[in-house]
Length: 309
Image 1 (cartoon, rainbow, N blue to C red):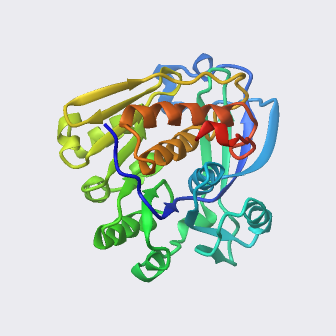
Image 2: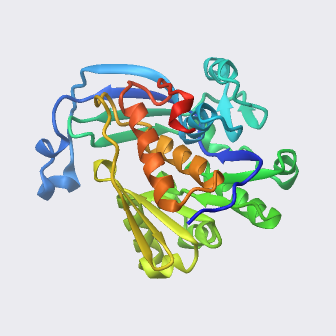
């Protein structure tokens, strides 16, 4: 199943974040008593902490740039954006549509990962609480657009992006992710309805079905393709009456899983706009997803042209 190659830039909306990445040498499950979850009180002693640039929009754009594409970031950052901005400029990633909010700091994510690669995160919103303002006028400046992805970020931006892309006829990927609890059922349905593709991990997909009170078949009536990632178990691709099972690629070493999902998305986008079949898109995405896992930080990896030739 070969598809036509899409021409144009990739529009990426979502978050820009400073990640505070921490390693917990134990297992969360050993510290949680299920019957006492309503009075949870746990202190995790971490071995390591580092601050890295991250966020859904930043991570996806970084990987797309490595893959030879031209991503346009729609997001927001604060008065401490300087370090991140220099990083983007160094990698020649456009920052024209990033709104600077001078009275706030850039969003910070505190991420703790246990030895089983389970994660607990706490997000200090700051600038992510302020819409960057995705409008027809702003998007038209970057036409033609090959594809867009609406990744987790400011909820108002997510809905506005879907509205603008639908009006302009731009194919977009719906990726509600961590914002599912903040989206109403009506907003979530609007985001998914008519999207070119819906992508989520298996836990998020369960949340989507629960919030919409619909099963896979009902969701597939709203969107052409559904991709569900399952970590080390690979991913599933639902399209029409077909279900494609994609194996996970194995990294040379597992340092930290943060950013693997965003790299997967960038890899899948590369496959879509190149006209590849859905199974090949999934296999390539899995291959790209292994690179950030081998590094401490979501944008610390590199790979050569041989990986996307």
